[in-house]
Each structure stands twice: as structure tokens, then as C-alpha cells.
Length: 263
Image (cartoon, rainbow, N blue to C red; front, side):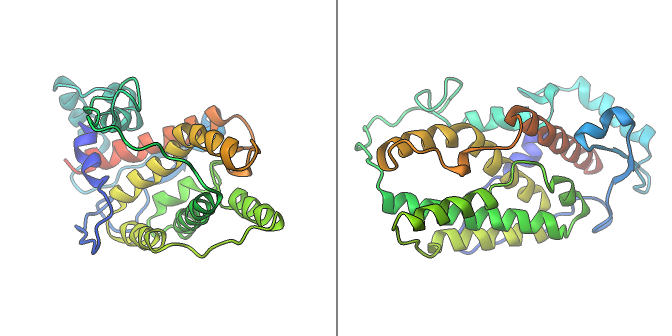
């Protein structure tokens, strides 16, 4: 259910994006993360929700939740927005790409692709631009909810800076960001101001995709062009699964509350 509300926000980058102005919550830039939860929840840095929307007290929200529970549930909905979004994403994958993929495979085989160091450098530079943008947005927090995603442990900008510095030391020329990278960075900035629901979807997709398929691709490319060297881009401090779970819980709270406030 929530994926029908949020997944429509996960659109491809248009050449001249025209954004629908939606409100993340009832009053602009008013946070619903107000009161700390118990000590048991501090490890995830979560916050309880203090609902003050006019005509929508907590009791009404509970009633709306009960009514929604009686309706047909979409795959993954019972586990929260992130799991539901994963099911939606699988609809865009083929069986060759993921075992849960539902999209029909391309009947015409794609030509074999061989990575190059030049192409990989362009990818790393554009990736750093994107992660710089995401981290700047959550640090600035035009909407208070964004601040919940600061210092999650998933940040990649610092790691990419180290990798690019090392590659430069190896004698490689570091290119400037490409136009597609610049366009996407500008798109994220615009979404973060005008369509926070869509921005949250892009935030989720960028960090979680890199932690999964991105790591596999990184290993294969490193074998081809870097003699198997593992870059800092593919390393995290701490247990990655725990870092992802902490962010997953925060994303679920933001999505759940925003969905019910939209009813």
C-alpha cells in the first residue's frame, strides 16, 4: 500500500524535471521526531512520534491503521516500507539480475562489456558527487526528518575521496564530473526541497543498492582493472548489516507516519 504512495516518486531523471509539490507533513518544516524513546531504543537513535496534526490525533491514527490493516496487503507491507519497496524494485529486475525478478529478460543478448580504468574513474567521480550531494542535503535538513539520516555509517564521500586520491597517486588523471552526474545532483537538490517523499526513495535506493549489487560489481571491476584491489568505497566501519538495519528502521518510521498523515 505504501509503495503505491511512495514508489511513484521513484522516477527516472527527466531532462527538465517538473516536480509536483507535495508536503512531507502537514506543516512545512515541522518535525514529528520530537520525544526520545526509551533507553532501549537509543542504539538505533530512533524517536517517538508526537502527532499534532489538526483533526488527526493519535487515536484517529490508530483507527486509520486498523482500517488499513483490514485491506489487502501488498507484498512486504507487513515488514514496513523498505521491504515493500524492495518488492516493487524486484518487478524491475529480470530473473538473470535477481532470483525474485519479475521483468522479462531481453531476448536480444547484450554485447559483452569490458570495464576500463577510464570508465571506472568517471563512475567513481560521479558517485562522489552524488554522495556529496546526499550528505549535504541531510546535513542541511530543509525538512527536519532528513537530519535523522546524518552519520548513519553508510556515508561514502570520505571513502571515495581516499580512493580518488590513491588513484591519482598511481598516475591516473582524475576527470571532472560528467554532465549526467551534474544533472542528477541538481535533481536530488530540487527533489529534497520540493518533493521530500521522492527524495527519501532516491536516498534509499542509492545507499542500499550500493551495499548489495554495487559491492558485487565493484569486486568484478576491481579484478579487471585494479588487480583485485578493494577500494575504500566498498568498506564500512562496523557491521554493515546492523548499519543498514538502523537506517531501515528510520526509513520505515518516516514512511509509515507520512502515509497515515496523508489519509
